[in-house]
Image (cartoon, rainbow, N blue to C red; front, side, top):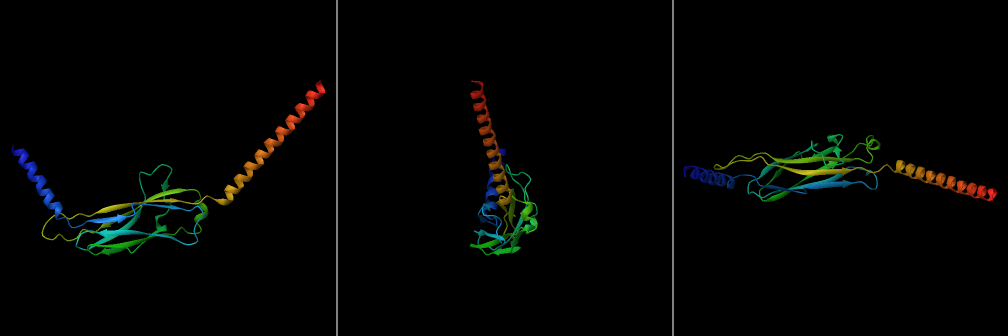
Length: 192
């Protein structure tokens, strides 16, 4: 009986503390996929991550790019995380409001020819600085994740060369087949 009272009391205490926690943020989007079917863009790629603070108190939020240990199938880590810039470094989100980070992906021109037909995966980690507790309660440092998937373009020059090579091989096979049929037909007439 005493054990049950201790467990119930512990659960109630935890619920009271959690109800006084000081941070409640949401982010959007949770997944960002960047496709480049037309080739590498001329300038940087940019998108926004919205951070909503549902709590009445303001909070400082940071965002950082990180590579992943457990990659999705057919993906590799982004070769250089310095190609991802997040502005601002620290975002103050007042209570009951939404602010945005801008994520800028800028692959240097010298690197683009080295990275055709690749699939990269990394994460943008959005975290809060724990605020000062007001009147007790538990203070949490919240970390939320945006999954970032990037598909680099197919090298058009290589795909055109490959297509030309396939057509050439098909024409050679067709020519050999026609010549073979001709000689077989001619030989069969000669033998009859």
